[in-house]
Image (cartoon, rainbow, N blue to C red):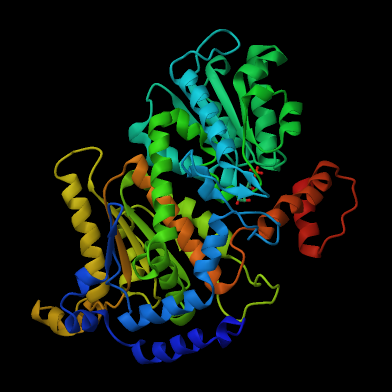
Amino acid sequence: MSTVLTNSEGWKALEKHFVEIEHTHIKTLFEKDKNRGQRLTVKDLGIYFDFSKHRITDETLDLLINLARDRGLEAKRAAMFSGEKINITENRAVLHTALRAPKDSSIKVDGHNVVPDVHEVLDKMAGFAAKIRNGEWKGFTGKSIKNVVNIGIGGSDLGPVMAYEALKHYTDRSLTFRFVSNVDGSDLAEALIDLRADETLFIISSKTFTTLETMTNAQSARSWALKQLGNPSAVARHFVAVSTNEKEVMKFGIDPQNIFGFWDWVGGRYSMSAAIGLSTMIAIGPDHYHEMLNGLHEMDEHFRTVPLHKNIPVIMGILGVWYNNFFGAQTQAVFPYENYLKRFPAYLQQLTMESLGKHVTLGGEKTNYQTGIIYWGEPGTNGQHSFYQLIHQGTKIIPVDFIGFKKSLNTLTPHQDYLIANMIAQGEALAFGKTTEEVRKEGVDEQLIPHKVFEGNRPSSTFFLDTLSPENLGKLVAMYEHSVFVQGVIWGINPFDQMGVELGKVLAQNIIPELLDKQKPIAHDSSTNALIEFYRQ
Ligand code: G6Q
């Protein structure tokens, strides 16, 4: 096998096949195979995954799966699950799957079984969450906690916010949750505007405990709290930390007892099932949290064991490659027909784009093919009244993921029927469109016909589940995590580092002193210099 993806036999076979089916309409594929809608589906773990409305044939699937296999998917998957240091640029294992592994399993990093460590932290989180929830944990003035503010950014924010919103139905409504991420002071100011320090708990979530945004927000939150509480020892009752950097956390004044740790083998964007989920656990309670972990684990096992042809994340991953590299798709849309999943697309943006936005291979060579696609989305049906137009009738190909649930968490007739009818109708319209003849039959004026024709042939997947439970959320998260892995393997890139984010963390550090000290000489390019001068004035 050639190590260059585009020279491989598998790739060449796909190129040839693409030319053959590029113009085949989804409608034709359905006409040829009356069972297609049932056949090209996977039903497992309570997920009904319909991938029949794609521009693929059985041969496409075979060729893509062969490619994935040739690129070493099975061996690489096994290496990830067994704790090998597959994140080679950071020399780290990649074990978010260990975070949801059952207590009796054994997963070793450098000869050490990490599963007991994981469960020790989970038990500690559960004990703490219970104390906050039942009012046993008292603030500095003896009051119980009513508000929980998570301060973190990127992977230390997006997972917790998404999970809180997604599982709001299961949360303790007597507690208020706020999430602060932006270094823009308005984020913190608005989050605290109506809160009292004596009944507020801050969770400072930062793997490194050095991130500018989080540290700035944490210091300001500390000042805000101390202004009201008057005594530095109050910090220990109102601040806890989720971090791998015990030294820095203690410097902040947080009691070492109240540090919830995790490990360098958990990447930020893969950390919502690590202690970064503390706010989630407080919100929904330890039992529901464990249900979410079970869901994640069930999907991990599905990915690890189910044959590639029936493996949901594998099929998602290869379809990603198909549209990105062969059809030249630039973006992938995700439309949850479930309002509680409103932050899910934002969460997926980080997961997918930070993981797959790489232009060099693991070997350090520049790729001569496209990698990570742009993810975006909004909950249905809102999107239908705005940007769906471009997907239906625009000039770009945008594969869509529809995510829907049979049962609503708020049974308000007839809302759920209308919601799901919309989801199903959109997938149908995207795939099959409306022909000139069909429009003409409707009696439309001849001049208007071209405007009312829908070409169709727009691909989509539908993920249909029973209801948005913590367990099902876990399955969906792990499903996307592993589909990212599949694409990373095929493209031969590292989905687990984030040098672009690291760069962002140092860039501002150079300019901050130049903004603070107006006399400091500046020597950037003329545009940057002018912007700094404008701010200084
Ligand atoms: C995620 C990224 C990044 C990270 C944040 C926060 O994979 O590495 O989004 O999570 O930059 O970092 P800290 O948790 O260290 O503050």
